[in-house]
Length: 402
Ligand code: SF4
Image (cartoon, rainbow, N blue to C red; front, side):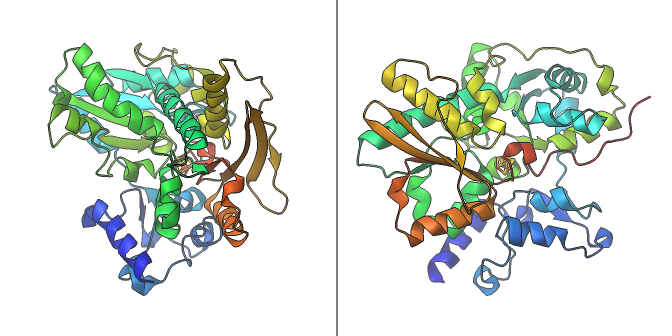
């Protein structure tokens, strides 16, 4: 497998070797050999067992989705905890710590404090981040809106031009991007060139926001809070350095630290903050407002829906109706839904997939039947159900502050 081999080598070069796996870690002493992690990786996500170990220099391949950590009941596999880095930045009087929170965090965080799954705790989450020492708390939903505008524009371009191929695949899920780069490198031209909401918003903070508020960008520590362990890898990709190019400061990264919903919940608990009774507070203005489009990013199909509705608006000048995308399940395939949408002279076939094993089955079927061009737009989210089921979401209720 020479092509696969060189691709893997290239992937490895992106991350310093001591940070080969910057998202999850394994503690052998806690492992009870239940094999749940193995099954999540090999069967659900189809990563383990789908490559030839000697071709990777015997290095296990990981797309950083964190589903192994999600299913491990013994705490043997956990995310790599980056809270100490955030605390150090908060303790440094020369730094300005800016949090931005992804859409799925506010509906997952409450679960760690005994609330029903899906409880919206946006205001308490913002208060907690301020209490922990954040100078600003921004809403990644704003970044999601930027991503949608870009992605919808790109889709219209692909539909009207022969320069770049359809279908357009979404690229906001970093684990899916790594999966495609590793196992289906021929799909790279199909991946949207649009950055994920976090990676689009971080450089805006370090350029536009820094300029407007007369802040030295070197002082800003951008911290994203996400349901996602794969974001820890995404922020390390060399190309996530738009602010460094803008300011001509080679050392600047767009996003400095990523912590998961689970890490935030444990930190709140460790600081003995009474989360349940916290007063709610709003996001900081500038990036505190967003449309409904950004809010649905956390669910499978949400990115697709927001982008198609926006493309429709750009093309027709009219708002799409509520039931504009009549999704239906794809027979014989799990975690895949499809729809046909008509606007103007375009008849667009779209699909939304969650779970990498489901994506593999869907793509293999398209390859087998040479039917790629049947679809115009395909959303893939690595975690089952989308970011709501992310590898960094809470698993257990934490002991409560009395
Ligand atoms: Fe991260 Fe969401 Fe992708 Fe899971 S589905 S890897 S949480 S972006």
